[in-house]
Amino acid sequence: MAATDATTGIIGSDAFRLHADDEQAMRQEVHHFEQPRAACIEALKIVQRRHGWVPDGAIPAIARVLGVGPGDVEAVATFYSLIFRQPVGRHVILVCDSSSCFLSGFAELKQALVTQLGIDYGQTTGDDRFTLLPVCCLGACDGAPALMIDDDTYGPVTPGDLPGLLEEYP
Amino acid sequence: MTTTINSQRDSIRYRSRLLQPEKERSAGTHPLTWRLRDDGAAVWLDEYLRKDGYQSVRKALGQGDPRAIIATLKEANVRGRGGAGFSAGLKWSLTLQGGDMPRGYLICNADEMEPGTFKDRLLMEQQPHLLIEGMILGAYANNARFGYIFLRGEYLESARVLNRALQEARDAGWLGPDIDGSGFDFDIVVHSGAGRYICGEETALINSLEGKRANPRAKPPFPGQSGAWGKPSVVNNVETLCNVPAVILHGADWYQGLSGDRTDDGGSKLYGVSGPVHRPGLWELPMGTTGQEILDLAGGLRDGHTLKAWLPGGASTGFLLPEHLELPLDFDTVGKEGSRLGTGLLTVVPDSQSMVALMGNLEAFFARESCGWCTPCRDGLPWTVKLLQALEQGKGEPGDIELLDKLAADCGPGLTFCAHAPGAAMPLQTALKHFRHEFEQGISRSRGPAHQDAIPLGSV
Ligand SMILES: Cc1cc2nc3c(=O)[nH]c(=O)nc-3n(C[C@H](O)[C@H](O)[C@H](O)COP(=O)(O)O)c2cc1C
Ligand code: SF4
Ligand code: FES
Image (cartoon, rainbow over all chains, first blue to last red; front, side, top):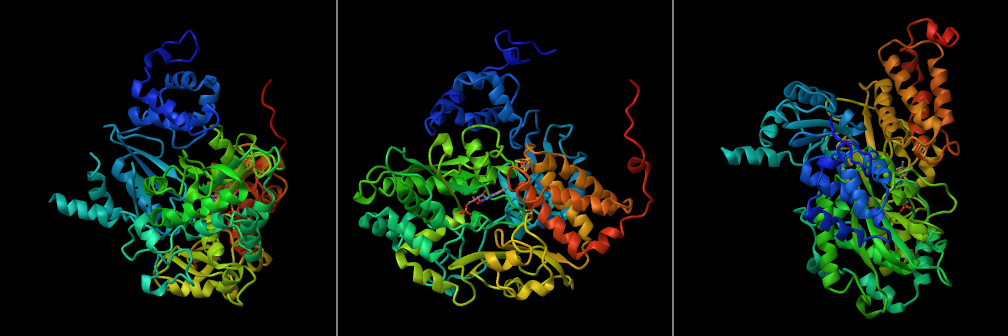
């Protein structure tokens, strides 16, 4: 069982230490806005860049840096689809399931991903290598069907492209 | 060995591209794209300046009359390219300024997430300075102190290009204090989002920018009265802002002339096609170009398909039929046919596609992306998806289609907090109108117990 931080009552808080560089980056980000709270999304992303996801303990830590309540940070953290509140694999595959891709071979591509990885949406492969998630139209519809792996956007992608492509992400 | 793998990976890497070569584009006819290079590389500051870059800023700030910018935009009838077609000049004329009013914000909506839309990405990745130039003009006209580019989180290449261009502009004095010796100061930062389609709705965008959940806000007050941090804020789409420099440089009559006698809407437009066509892509064409002309540029449908239906501007627009291909694609004409121009990027539906299945896909998108604030949207859309899935599997029941009608009507304009729900209703209503028989074919069972019995209360 995770421990509870006495000051915040949030499970797992004590296990999380905000990296000094990250805290510095968050304080830097605050300058872009009229109120520190606006840096919340970026702060979550900063944590995610280091840890791959946003552990529970990061929520009160970010709240302290921004001077807001942990509830405010948690409300944001749970709203946005690119903030991960559970551990993900080393690489995240975002497969576009919107209309143009649907009309251009999405179903076959998705099926091939499921078959080759042995996982479905929201799951991570046993070796912690890949997490599979759906995403809204990637703005790559002239290259449908499209997907992203980490920072890279690909399209059109055929099922036959997948083995070679996935190999690039060890 | 490694090189082979790399080239395979690079060969399927997505690259934004315009399908018109440089020699077919000119400053007088293609104000949005004439500077783009055939090699698709970004046009950086030196090249941009060689190609008349920032001349509109020099002209407008030199003249020193922000109101004149607004008057010219109004006269040119530049209509919002984010989907709603609202006059940019009119919007800017309503921004509160002067007196005790604090200087506010100029916000570029770069959240591009409307399914079927891939135009703003091209402008940002290949010609970042045109957007910056348009934003400076917008800031000057609206007395904005600071600018944000609200960029969807997945557009990492756009973020990289924009940030480099912003630094170039700052170093050269096009951003920062005393721009071009005018005494006007303005700067811009890129704010990258973290997903969710609803962030593109302008008031949800402002909440998101402030570091809150992206629930839309009540209007009025409109952003121009009270937007980010309660200050007057102007929200415009990327393509809209990219239209402004040429209008200021060449005037309203020239802009109006771009669309000839095709339509009353002036200017040019980034039109595009996606779906099963030979050459899906993007073109800058006169406003009011017809669907047929655009489809021809895309080489028509592939694999021997014929056209069944099409969406003129994204998932939240209504289905049109092949007979509508001859219409000029402008805001009012498409509106009169029960659809909307939306983003102006066509989605093509082939004859082999089941409309019920396609609607299932569209409504699953809208259901997932609902922010959850209003009942018809939060609860009605998942219910709609369930009914569509049942119909697709041939397990529909009598009354299901009438229920779909009702659920869509409940999402109609004015019944919900924002335009997300009406956007979900329009494709469904037009699909039910044009292709009702396909939905009817999904009804196989007599009315089941779920419809007949009183709602079981369970044991207490
Ligand atoms: C659910 C929803 C999503 C939207 N997404 C976008 C978007 O991604 N980009 C955009 O420019 N406008 C989007 N809009 C429209 C904006 O609310 C707003 O009308 C637009 O940014 C105004 O700019 P314009 O007048 O220059 O078009 C969206 C609207 C709704 C209701
Ligand atoms: S219509 Fe939908 S997306 Fe818009 S505010 Fe209501 S619940 Fe949210
Ligand atoms: S619908 Fe998949 S990239 Fe646009």
